[in-house]
Length: 95
Image (cartoon, rainbow, N blue to C red):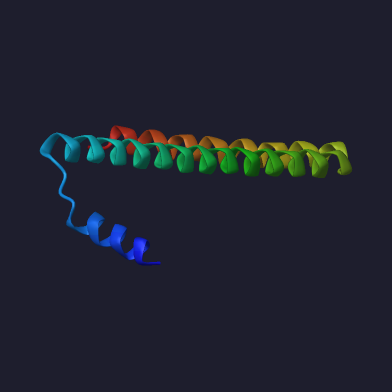
């Protein structure tokens, strides 16, 4: 137990050199960047999975409907996609 307290006291008073501080900071930044990248990848994968499930649900719903209603539903979906694309393009064009 005394050894533990001794080591803690020694670690507190230990001072790093300038180059050691830079190396430690660089390593910390690299680890943080890697964590952020991993979190971003996980979010992207979750979004892709959600979109797949949504699409599969839509396809299953289409299969259960009569042909004329299928066309109506497909047309509505197409119109929504076109509206989204127009909105995105208008955001890109505006200054």
